[in-house]
Image (cartoon, rainbow, N blue to C red; front, side):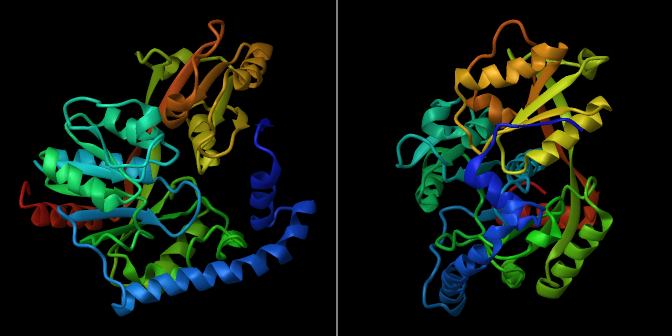
Length: 374
């Protein structure tokens, strides 16, 4: 299938090396293994300090449901947060969302949305927080590097009764009642080593902290890989509730925000671009929607797009008269496109593939700790 790579340099070389792809990148492996030793020492020390009680987590102003992972890159945390917030709302529970606000301007606690209106722009909030706030009317969103301060803001200024902590598994400072960990079945098994020799932020043994494990992208992954992650969960977190999920195309909108049907892509070539943690899963979702090969243009995660990037994207589209598709996260960071190409935003939604009972049990537990719904 066609590929266009706008990403280059160290990130691309590292990904090729840890995925055990052929080529010069493999020469990096000895160095990466060496560098993983101090990383592993620091990670294990932090884990031990909190598990032993020598350091204590701060009790939150609200009950906390952490959504996190043990790997770098995209496992579907944002889509999972959206799913949880919507499911809880349907059960009568008002959930707020707490994020770090990665790459935002400013570092203090900030209320991005009070549940009724957006209170700032993406530059102040960070792209993920602003996206969540825009897609979750009724759910307040707050950001701060010190997540406990964002939590206090939600408790003091909104009607949230429970907080969803985005990317919280390694944030030991904040106590939580539920620790949901996402394991991405789309990542290669060869990368199951601690960073930077692999994709793991911390070893699988640390899954013992998890109360729930969801294996994401289970629908498009190799069944053997899914089975391997089931075995990992059974070995290190046999107590955890286990489910499999998929990310499906939820809706297609124009750049201006108008909802359209997939028929607008009928018979047209497609160029897809993304600068997210796991772009391959998005590209595969586009191909599933369009039933054809797609020209893929990959940028680094959280890439700050400029008009110059449109030269690369629009050039690929103009050559074949292609439509252009991107993710909601990328659309937030991208300046307006040239007027002579059709650009669409494809949003994912989470679907439970198996383990619906485990998902329902998690949601019921959140209802109980929030004191609302059911």
